[in-house]
Image (tube, rainbow, N blue to C red):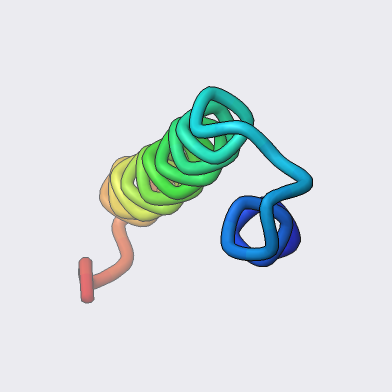
Length: 54
């Protein structure tokens, strides 16, 4: 992570590092929510089509 390296060498602030960590955590959460939504809606579609839900 670039902000971590900047912080370690003294060119970045603690706030910059925390903002980067927060952004990464938020992106991971959004990704996992998208996967959950995709799989949930795929199962609903398969059920509506009379297909076996996997």
